[in-house]
Amino acid sequence: MKILLVEDNKKLTEALHFLMEKEKIYSDIAHDGEIGLALGLKSIYDVIILDIMLPKLNGLEILQNLRKSGDLTPILLLTAKDAIEDRVRGLELGADDYLVKPFATEELIARIKSLARRAARECDGDRLTLSKVTFNCANQMLRINGREQMLSAKEGQLLEMLMRRPEQIFTREQILDKIWGYDADIMLNNVEIYVHHLRKKIGKDAGIELKTVRNLGYLLRVSKNDK
Image 1 (cartoon, helix red, strand yellow):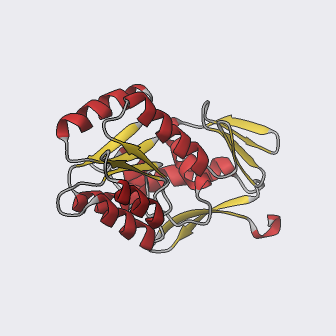
Image 2 (cartoon, helix red, strand yellow; image 1 turned 90 degrees about the horizontal axis):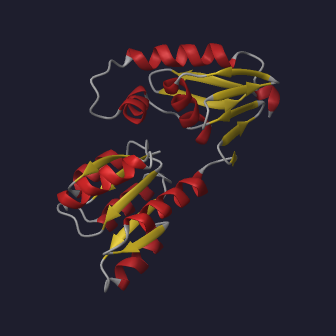
């Protein structure tokens, strides 16, 4: 799971980053609202955590901009004890949950996991299903018409990303940021290589198509004959 944590308290973000990594929740961090919004608009995160009190843009402004852009990523707001109006406003703008500061790390992690589970499409436990394809996210096993094969870690991450949001176009930059990290020193043609390998493993009898959208990116959709 990958999240975006937008919080200006650097000591807090360092501590949360370390603790969440132990739970296999990996985080990108922004310390001001402008960077937070720019990263959020990439649509590569499973959950976004927004502090309301931020420099440059506050959390509610980020939330409003993300929802106006059509981004449906689950968002959890971090609010002050007496900020009832902010909580109400946040929920009205499309926040999925809120947590009052100070909070227990265990509760934050539980809420992140809950939001991620709620957002998963056609997901049964650790399995994702689309047409004739079932992918087990836990063991990286791809099953198509009774045929099973193991995917590599990166292939599995790519397939999971596409299966959770069928019909959504992902640019090469979005895929690179999601799987390798936005600051990774990796060439864009790595994405093309993994798409090629994954397309071959899916094959032509899966009921889904991994399409290249010219000059835009890639999307996964149910084949016309299987709709």
